[in-house]
Every structure is written in structure tokens, then in C-alpha cells.
Image (cartoon, rainbow, N blue to C red):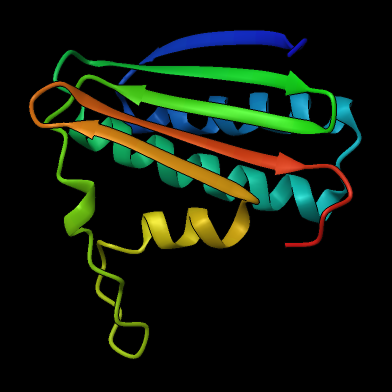
Length: 135
């Protein structure tokens, strides 16, 4: 598979989420996503970024943007506490709490989501949005 890659590493500080949102917007715009699609992608990336910052152990979060033939794949990696992905509970949308909606939001906005996580080794969220596909 041929694709272009843009990689970034940030310190795990909440104030850097806006830099990732701007970067995401610029890349998605250059590929040809609509404004609504770009907003969806930015929200999904913000959720993944916020989770990674919250759980990072080494003060770093890595982002890999892969421009693929028919869309954009974004990986967000941290070296945090990790978790058992099989035990993620679906959120109670009738009684939402402050935490626990991030993965649900990401899966709602993106076309494909893969999560890899190991306890004490970290988590990688891979999100893909395809051009011309209505979510």
C-alpha cells in the first residue's frame, strides 16, 4: 500500500491538543474532506489525544497520519497504563458520565477504528476516515 506519512510527537500536555487539531484539519483539508468530515475527524482525534495525554507515563504522545489512496488513517500512541480492551463497557447514553464516552465518540465519527492496548505498555488507537463515505 502506497501512502504518505506525517509523524509528530508532543509532550502530554492538554494545551497541545489544539496543535494536533490544527494539524489534523490541515491534512484532512489537503486530501479533500468536506468541512463536516474535517470537524468529525478533529473531534475523534481530540478524544484520542485527550485519552493518550491522560494516560501517558513518559510524557509523550505520538501521532502518525497516513494519507492513503481513499482517505486518512491516524494513529495515536501512548506508553501509558494500558487497559483490557475486551472489558470496555458500552456507555449508558441515558445517564452519561464525564468519562467513558471517548471510544464511543471515536467509533461514531470514524469509518474504521482499531484499538491495541497492553497493561503497563500503552495504547494505540488507529482511526480511518474514507473520502466520500457517509458515516
